[in-house]
Image (cartoon, rainbow, N blue to C red; front, side, top):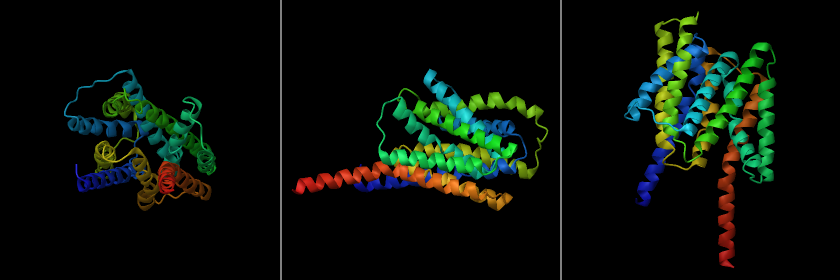
Length: 296
């Protein structure tokens, strides 16, 4: 491929990942606008997801080994915990608490894979933990406390999902499809016990936005985009999601964050962004050092 072709391919990849982040960021406003319980919402989203992802993979047949199955279970838990968290706390707090996942992956690599951490990485880890603590502590009444706890747990399962699918023997595309099947089978029975289940045009509108755009189309964009750009750039562009997430929620529902949660929000976003930039900065520094040594 020519240099121009590679540039165009990377541009397409960046646009796809930006689209993914914006579509994923619709989760908060969709869940807040649907009066159903989190199990019913998850069942509806996954029903649409099974159809869309099945068409994308051109087959509804499931092929999964044990590791792919484990990743699918982690993905299902992440989705359900996150949905429940949005219902019980602010959408912004829920997504920020989930963003502890990259730090947990980092800690896993340090303690289990024996990767020696740099001082800068350790500082960033502490900053993210501090930001999450601020978001968690913003409202300590029982309802928000439980929602915040679920948000943290969604970060733990999200980290597990990343770790499992980073193994080359696991099939992330197959796992994504399988997770929708698992979630739908588990959550569908709860539709019959949901006292808030209703099908007004407004509710159906948000259900379709959630299933078709926030999940189905978003994951198709992600699957294509992450193949065109490297994982560092992908992770940086995806930080658009937690920044964008509270905006439509505020516009549609008027929901706002408390002062501590707002402070924690910015601490986490800045720290995660810097964490994603570190490899790029270190690579450039190494290249400059090598260039200077070559000129000596």
